[in-house]
Structures are given as structure tokens and as C-alpha cells.
Length: 604
Image (cartoon, rainbow, N blue to C red; front, side, top):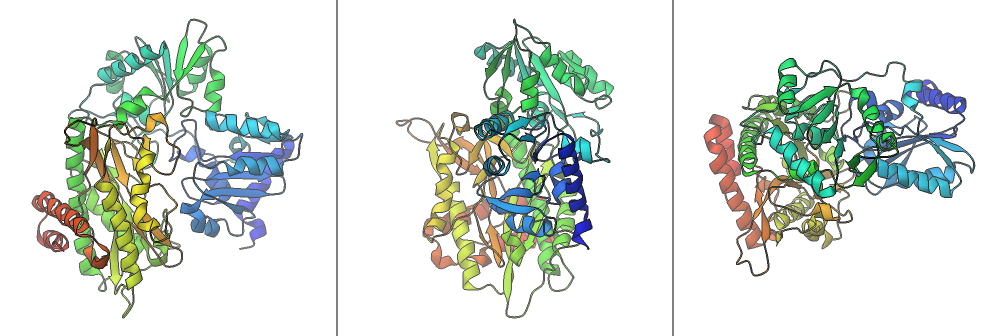
């Protein structure tokens, strides 16, 4: 292909024409939508359309004569391959939340010039940070420039799939009770109204689900909650008549999606509006009536939905068992077919997804299956495509690792699991890396901590076995997981991020534990389980303690272990875990899958 006429280069030129027309020097294109979603509806996948980079996180900056993509270490190899020949340079940043693009803009845009951005998709805190730094550099900011509308002639519209109710028994707490919880929190803040834009908060709060965002059972909407009612701003035709009637019975009215801004603008001097500054956009904040008083605090629903009830936890355990049974069926087939059938990374995705689809309560995948063989496993967010994927084959006298990260959405919970499997004859380096990561997973899984401990404070526990060998990994150790909602959920985050009060670990939270080790060009290792915060039995002298209940049910391959690196207590934990896996899954499988389960859960 002549790169001078490649689609990406032509799109960049159209952007530069639009910049000149609007007297702008640069434009910032974040990976975001009006709801600050992680996974975006097609309408707001502009960063991908303009750059060709398909990772879920990244920031694109385009100037009149330059372009740069900012991505963290999870995506470096992927980004370099996908933007090659486009004229876009990759700027490697340490984490997805880093703000290196702001400094880049301040240094690349001449004083007195202007940068454009669509404020309706830029987070409030991010916009404030950007404006502050550009002002110091004497650079102006235009937050009304939607470059996608300017250059994307075939830009998709709003998704139209219908909304549906998440019903009992899988939704144990009625909508009215959740709204009452939020109103109590509003009253404590002195608020008369509360505006919510984050789609997972809205789905949880109203006991509704949808399919507007791939892999997440959510729908696009805003909500304005008062002390006596609520308005759901959603596109016309998305809410069926029976759901509309059920909402009305709980005091929830519907309004067109586009009217949310007008409702905020209508707020006056008697109104006190509660907003979460990290969960609304600059454009939303600018819409609030000038006379209204604003109170800033975390969305109450974000805290409430992170703490799963006992009834919800029971459903999650059942979903985990069904998910584990599906994986037994898949892995039994995989090991039997390996070396006899042609198996690729795409085959793994197809076969594993098909097994999940057979399980009761399954709705869909919770994210795109990551199946990375050998060097592909060294890219944490690798995605095989028909044009680029590896064949998984055993070579005589040689071996490598296959990393599979996958998950499902069930009516009773969301799953996320990573396992690594030996392909061929492993060497000592494979076993060493695998065992170090496993030691990190076990170390954090066994941890007890005082209730209220800020989640970033326990991140190092999983890294110590790696740090002792001068090794580290570039992503967080764990993220919160929703209840038949987003696979990535706050407020807790087991990572190197700066601890904040709202990150306190509380009973009922579900979090991943997933340390990793990645050797570019060779292999990757990540072992991930989901865990539930449960009370730990202590005498109470030093207050209330929590510990983790491991929810994920699937064998951890012991063939990859260097047993000489394992302590006796670590081996005991693994054997007890495998005994639980065998006990819970055996009634759900038969034949080859049961034989495989029994073999892979034998004690070491």
C-alpha cells in the first residue's frame, strides 16, 4: 500500500483541513464518550477511526504538521504495529491515567495559538488540568470543537437496542430501595438533585440492562434524581412499554436523551446539585444553571454497587461454577485436540466462547477473549485477528506458553479469569517466570487486612516475589468487577495509583488479583482470580479485619510450576484451592471434562 494514500493518512489530512478552517493548531481526541465509558459505542470510537489503533485506552493528538498517540505499556507493541506507516508517532507513557499529552501539547503548540477538543466527552477533572497547563503556556482551549462531526462523514448514530429489566431473583434489591439509598446519601450532602452520567451506575440504580456498549450490559442514558422522583434521559424507542410502566410506578419518568443538558440548565438558586467531578464531562458541568449550587462528591451509587449483598454473592458463586464448568469442557477438548487438529488463537476464542454460551444464565462475553501464544502473550491486551494470529502447535524439543484471559456475563454475575498453559516442553525460564507470578497471586489471595484499608496499599504484596528478582509488570494488580455489569468497576483499585479515601476496601467488594510477567518477543504470564471481601475471624482487639474468598473456579496448571521455588504453605494453599475447584465443578461436568478436571486438580 502507498502510505501516502492510506486511509489513516487521508483522515489526518481532513482533520488538518478542519483545523485550518476553525483557526486551530491542534486537536485532542480522547478515548471517551459523554459517559466516560471504558468501552465505547461505535459513534465515539473516533480515536480508533483516526489512528487505526484498536486498544481500549489511548489519547490521540493531531497538529497541523504532526500527530502523536499516547499509550501505556499494555499496548506498546500493539500500537507500534497498528500505527506503522500512518505518520503518527507513539509516545510511551507509564500508565493509562498519565497526562503526558498535556505537556506535549503545551510544548508543541506555539504561544497564542488554540487547541480544540470536544468538551462533551472530556472528563471534568481532565479538562481542568488541560486548561490550567495550556493557560500557563499561553495556549487557548476551545472545548466546542467536535472534530468527528467535521471529518467522519459516515459516523454511526446512537445505538438503538432496547433496554430490559434485570429482574429478581438475580436482582435481589428493588429499584425503589436503591433510589431510597441514594436519596439518603443526597440528603446527607444537602443536595436536592443528583445528576448521574456513568452508564454502569445508571444500569445498577434502575435495575436495567442493555447492549449499547460491547461486552458491558449497559445502555446510554443520563439520570437526574430528586428527593421525590427521577428522570431518565434515554433515546426514544429504547424503553419498551412494560418497562416504562414499571419505571413510572417507582416515580421514574423518561425524557429524550438530548434534553439532559437543558434540564441541568434549568436548575436555579433553590437547587443544590450533587455531581461526581470524576464521573461527568466538562460539557455536562458547563450545562448546569449558573445560579444552582453544586456539591461535589463521589456518586453514592458507585459505592453502593461495589458492595455486593449476600444474595448477590450467592448468585456470583453459581455463575463462577458455571463459568468454571465451561472452561473444563473447553480445556478437555483443547488438550485432546492439540497436535491432532489445527488450532489457532482464533480457535481458542471460538471454542471457549461456544462452551460459555451453553451454560445457564449466560448472556455474553465480558470482554474480548485474549488468547496469546508465545510472544503474543507478552502483550497484555493482545487481540488475535483473521489477518494476524498464531497457530498453536507443539514443536519437537521446544515449548512455550499459551495465555488465555477471558470472561462471561451471566444474569448472576460477571467473570474474568486468566490461565497459562504449557505447549510442548517448557524450559527452566518458563517455569521460573510462571512460579514467580503464581507466588504473587497466592500471596495476595491469602492476605488479611483491616477493614477500610485503601486498596492501592496492598498492591505491593503481589509484586514482592517478582521484585525480589528485579522484575515488575506495568499494569495494576487488580480491578473491581461489577455484578452483571462492567468487568472493570471502581472505586477500589489494587494498583500503584495514589490512594484516596473512596478506595477503602469494604465487605462485599469483588476484585481481581492478576499479577503478570511479560518478556517481549518471548512469552507472557498472568494468573488471575476474582476474590470477594469477607469478614476475617479475629478476636476484635485490633478492630475488624477482612480477607479474600477466591471466587474463580478453574485449575491452575501445575505442570508449569518450579516446585523448588514454592514454600510448603504456598503448596498447601494451591492444593486446598484445587480441592475446592474439584468439589464445586465435578457435579457440573462429565466424561472428558470430568476426567480433565480430576487430573488437573491432583495435589502436588
